[in-house]
Amino acid sequence: MDFELKTLDLAEAARQKCDALVVLVAEGFKPGSDPVSRLAGTALKAGDLETKPGKLLQAYRAEGVTAPRLILAGAGDGSARRVQSAVQAAVSALRAKGIKRIVVCLAPAADEFAVRAAVLAAADASYVYVATKSKAEGRALERVTLAVADATTVRVAFDSARATAAGVEAARELGNLPPNVATPTRLGEEARKLAKAHGFQCEVLGPKEVARLGMGSFMAVAQGSSQPLRFIVLKYVGAPASQAPVVLVGKGITFDSGGISIKPAPEMDEMKFDMCGAASVLGVFRALGELRPAINVVGLVPTCENLPDGGSFKPGDVVTSMSGQTIEVLNTDAEGRLVLCDALTYAERFKPAAVVDVATLTGACVIALGAIRSGLFASDDGLARALQEAGDAALDLCWRMPLDDEYGEGLKTNFADVANVAGRQGGAITAAKFLQRFAAKYPWAHLDIAGTAWKGGPSKGATGRPVPLLVQYLLSQAGPATGKARAARRKAAA
Image (cartoon, rainbow, N blue to C red; front, side, top):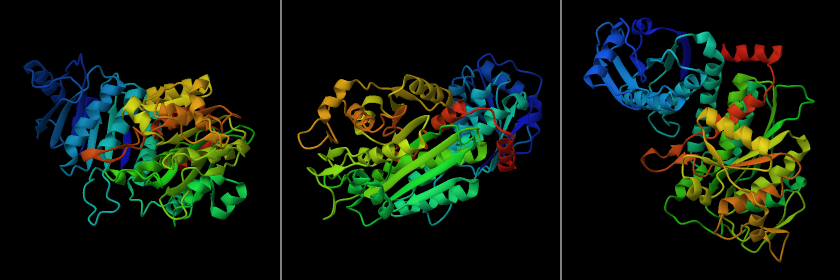
């Protein structure tokens, strides 16, 4: 879907040729003399229109409006979160009507945060998965024009949001693919395509290369599947080589049966979403390809399946990680940390400014935070603060969790340096404590997205989170764009 930004007042917006006009009406709305303002003012006075976010009033062939359909959408106080709710409700209402082009009018006082929220909400509400359906029906929306009081003042935020939306969609598409399609090999192919399209550096390592690196923990998880593992290394260079990169690590378990510690059958199909950490890293790189910020970023994706087989790793096995630390496997369903720990050790070679791993790691995090906020764990207060602020700005929320040393006591074992699980209590924290052992040489953060990476039930599907948070974080860390980066950005936008 395409987005564009225009400077339009309500009178000009009413004359735009499109299939539907959406006008956000915030608290304190003061009607003007144009047809839309008069209609909104009358509806508010009569009580037929409420400014409560998500409340809609629809009209057909309204007088003075070129578009056949008009939606007046309540936007509360006009804040980014209320704008998000209003746009999602309006676009969702239009999606079933075969609408191709819409114009969305924000309030005159809309700031960059509201603009960003509107773009991402429109993209989210119009997304339809069709990749493995016999008939590609569903998504009809082709263009969204955002009408604002002054396009020049919010252009940067709009461009960032548009690129982020593309990254979110890429992550959702990969996450939603069935596990017989989205194999480790397929993820490697997608990474190569991404690199070719945007000029990234890319390596895709197979079992032999991973064995030479000594990633015994990662290899143990993969050994029960006939699908060969892949270790993906993506590099975006937007700053001088002397600038230390940010490294993003995404868990890429393309299907997780639990291995020998097999999961219950109900909802096991949702374990195709266990690669959403990997999908989000690839989605971030999709956004970087358009934005070209002045920063260096490395993406690492260890990807494999976790299946029960005669060759599978077993509870009681002891494996040797790339760091040399030995790990006693007490539960094969705690496999994500076993692939991530070797990737965290590999990250040391880049002498990173920071490392952020992203993983659908623990059901315990879902119990703690539900589906609203991702769990944030960090060894560095500055990094934690930057990620929290990025999530707040992007409306992709996280919440910092503790990492007290005492939580690591349960990982002690008589048979190795560390066990891969502790007891039931504080499971999300003990999982993070396990990872922290392998991330001591740089500022490190861990995002547990088990509750936020996908939805179940009737709206089942990947969400693309935390792509918005990560893009916002990287942009906040980037320096001024170089001439080369600006030229690349203009070329990507053309």
